Length: 231
Image 1 (cartoon, rainbow, N blue to C red):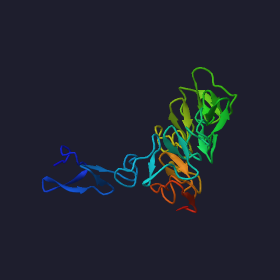
Image 2: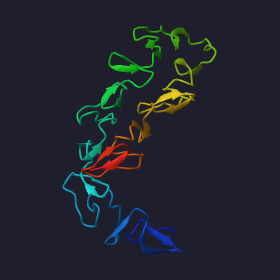
Image 3: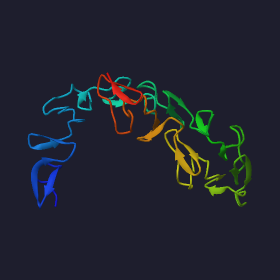
Image 4: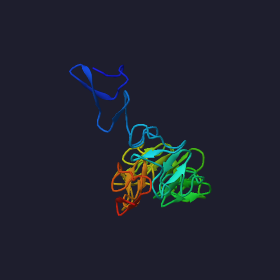
């Protein structure tokens, strides 16, 4: 049974009929259930409208302290690769945003305009070492593509990789660690002191968009201090 035809979704459906209650986290404004914590047209209360282009966070209009307001949205300048440090700074060439600066992910190195794990035919063992046609890269050595990978390595595309430590093939050839995560024991994980939230490694003690936990966002005027939202 669904309550999608009444105009009050996501109202609670009980015993085959829709009642007047809204689902948890929603509030009834008129004949519609809205999430007042994030609805810019009903921010914190029904009918409280944020200024044009201003988002609603935690029931308050505007971004938390220390957070960038770019193109009508709030972004963490310390971890967002599209707005790293400033709204205009986007990380390119496979770089990630860490502590407000663009750089290569753990286990990778800057080779020209791109980041490389130095285990590809284009950058085999070093930025300047290129394998010949018909060869693949086995960590630091170019070998014929018809040759089996050395012990402990697995063939993934045009490279022989260690599935336990390779961020681009972590655990399996198709599993890529993202957002600054490294591969350890075949599992992706963030560096010490950071947690994976929305595809990025963030510091829960200082991120106003992920304060203390990935799901906790500080409101406008608040900052995140030691994992707690404070004015």
